[in-house]
Each structure stands twice: as C-alpha cells, then as structure tokens.
Image 1 (cartoon, rainbow, N blue to C red):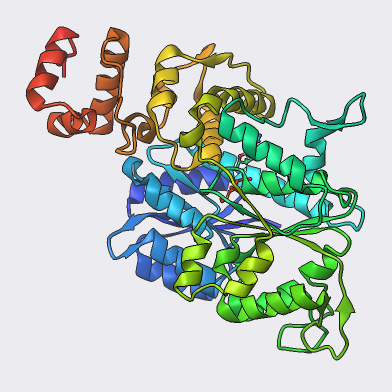
Image 2: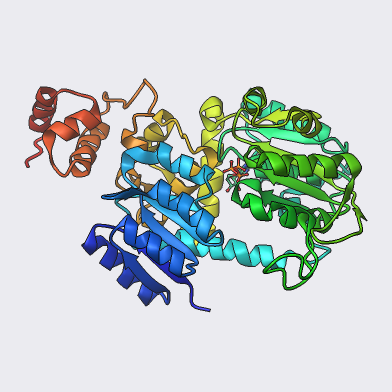
Amino acid sequence: MTQQIHIVEDDVAFGKMLTTFLERKGFDVSVSLSGEYARKMISENTFDLLITDLKLPDDSGLALLEFARKVSPNSKVILMTGYAEVDTAVKAIKKGALDYISKPFRPEELLMIIEEDSLKNTTAENSTSETAVSKSAENYEIDEQNQVSEKPNFVVGISESSKKFNEYLRLVGPTDMCVLIQGESGTGKEVAAKAIHDFSNRKNQKFVAVDCGAIPKEIAASEFFGHVKGSFTGAVNDKKGHFEAADGGTLFLDEVGNLSYENQIQLLRALQERRIKPVGSNSEINVDVRILSATNEDLLKAVSEGKFREDLYHRLNEFSIHIPSLHERKEDLFMFTEYFLAEANSSLGKEVAGLSKEVEEAFKNYAWPGNLRELKNVIKRSVLLTNSKLIPLEVIPSEVLFSEKRQKETVDFSKESNEKQLILNALKEADFNKTKAAKLLNITRKTLYNKLELYKIEL
Ligand SMILES: Nc1ncnc2c1ncn2[C@@H]1O[C@H](COP(=O)(O)OP(=O)(O)OP(=O)(O)O)[C@@H](O)[C@H]1O
C-alpha cells in the first residue's frame, strides 16, 4: 500500500522540493504550511509518516509531535532541525519521534531514514513467529571452549567503562534477575538487553521489546496483557499481549519511566503474581517472563518525586547496569566509527575507506549528545555523500563541527588546512554573514577578517 506522508514546512520552496522528490519515489505526499493546518490534517487523516520542521511560525515541531502521538499514535514522526538544535531533537526522540534530520540535508538522506524504518518494520513483522529469537543472537558465537563470545560485529570497546559494563552483561545474563539498564539516549540499551537475553538460557525463546514511551496509557493494559474480542470499542478480535508473547522468554521494557502511575500498578501486580488477566477476560493466565527494563532518566529521582512507584523500582532493579555515554568512553569512538563505516559501506554499496584527518579531529572534539545512534547516523549520511576515498569535512553535518556542545579543546587551529576548511564551512552555514560566521567559529570579527586575508578567501 502506498505510504501516506504529510510534510509540515513553512518554507514553500523546500516543502515543494521534498514533495516532488518523495512523490517520484512512490509516496503519497501532502503539505501543511502552518501548525494550525497541520493539526487539522492530522486529526482528519491517518498518515504513516509526518515530517515536520522544528520551528514553525505559529507552532513547534515538538508540540506537533505530542499532538500526533495523542490523536494518531501509529503515525511516525521525523523532525527537521537547524544545526544548533540537536539537543531538542534528542528530546524529540525521547518523546517518540522516529528520527531527526539536520538542515540543510539532501532528500536522499531523508529517504534513507524512511527506508531504514520500513526495513526494520518488515524484519519485526517477520520475526513475530513463536520460534523467533532475538536478532542479537547473531552477534555472538560459540567458540572452541563452548563459551559464548562476541563476534567482531558486536563492539565491546577498549575503554575501562565499556569492559566493565560488558562484563556485567555476561555475569547477570545467565541468572533470572530483573535488570534495569540505565544510560543516555542512543547508548545501546536495547543492544545490551538483547545481549543479556542471549547470555541466558532463554536465548532460544522470544525477546520482545516494548517501547513504553510510545504506548498511550489508555491502551497500555491491552498492549501488555491482551484483550478479548468485544471488551471495548475497537476490540474486534482476541489479542495476545506482550507478556503472553514473551512467555518463556524475555520482555524488554524500554523507557519504563514513561509508564503512567496506573500502568505501573498493573505491571507490578503482573510481576508479583506472575499471572496476567487479559482485558475483558474472567480467567488468568500464568506467564514465565524475565523482565529487563531501560530508562534514560533518573528513576530514583522520579521515585523521590512520587512519579514512579518505589516498589516497582525495586522489582525492576534487582541488578542495575549503567551504560556510559559515548562522551565518557572516547577511547571507543574510533572502534565504533570503523564498525558503523563498514556497516554503511555494505548497506549502501560503497567503498569509503575511512575518515579524513580533519573529520577525525572534528569527531574527537564533538560531545555526541545522541551517542552511538547519532554517530551511526552521521557516518551513514556522510558515506552516502562521499565520492572520495576518505570522508571529507564538507559532508559532515554542521552541528558536529560547530555545536555549542563541542568540548573545550575545540578545533585544532594549528593545522592550516583545517582552519581554512572550517572557516569556509562556517561562512556557508552563516549564509556568508561574517558576524554570524565569526560567532560560529568562536572568534572575533576582526580575527575572521585577518584570516580571510591570510587564506585569500574572497567573498
Ligand atoms: N555494542 C554495540 N555494537 C555495535 N552497535 C551498537 C552497539 N551498541 C549499540 N549499537 C548501535 O547503536 C544504536 C543505538 O543503540 P540502541 O537502540 O540499543 O540504543 P538505546 O540506548 O536503546 O537508545 P534509546 O535510549 O533511544 O532507546 C543502534 O543502531 C545499535 O545497533
């Protein structure tokens, strides 16, 4: 079926360009120029995908995202952001957006995100059979001593913190303990949960991952415990819930801190009694499920503020694992880079050999607020745009080069080639406005003028 896409963009020309591109790729596309019109459209139609600008004259992309999650929970949302808005975009991902894309971007980059998501969905659909096992099982193999070990395609890392948390995965894996995995968005919490499952004797049973942040509280009970036909409007068939689907295996509750208080009580009851009752049913079903959960917020603080039940917190947290942010494990950066580069080359049919020296520097200096997910995205988009052996600075998104989140040791201005390229990038980014470009570079206007002269950059 043709996918219905709705674009919310007040820049008429840009919206038109995206529409034409996506229509050529076979999508059914409509556009809103304002938040008000977009809200009307979202209420009256069911779109598969909503692509919205973060800044609208009468609204914000974040508010639209929240609105869409309420009135049309099945619609995916991609946010288009300016270069300095990565933090907000990361917030958007936490609120349930599929992804974000920083402007300026080429339409091919957007298509890549859309196609990657459809691919994921197809894989997910194909793996709903009773015998399906976790995808991350592919990440491990049995060695000669019959020990489970990582294949090279699962990056363990060389930093002390990575070694430690991977050791914890190994240790807690074979137990039946409930594990709470904590870490910033994109650090690899789901990958870690799958690894725990794969180290357990449930590894040949199902691993069911549930994004608690994406379930509206009204239907959470039916999602977790299932329902019987006719139990509420819209319940046209009996439906199995996640607990039953994961019976014998592992249930991974992602963003568990987002569950409403009422849903927390229901979950606690199910965990204590190891029995569930589908909505509208009179009989209970025994379930044997190991619970792993993850959060990127401070759950203990949520407990002290009365937003998260303390008894549930202790149930879920029989063992806790903290995944370090990429910023805290900089030693692993280039291992992950190599891995994601190989992955991007193979999926895009390219043969990019590595990063240029300047890009390497920029990567080292960036704080990576979106962690491994951001690194993976940046590399994939850059590989797509690279036509040389090494990834050049020009294809790197400007937030990586100029974000306020960059660490203090900023750009190595001692290297002339770096400096000239960075100045050119900043000028481009600032639409050749020198005051803005100087600000981006964190130098005075006068210094910028001197440097323009030094490098013979004519404007
Ligand atoms: N050890 C690893 N080796 C290789 N790739 C990894 C590893 N850990 C994470 N990744 C990749 O990084 C990306 C982010 O991982 P994941 O989805 O597990 O993060 P998350 O912490 O669950 O994110 P969120 O908080 O947004 O739910 C994924 O594409 C994943 O495949």
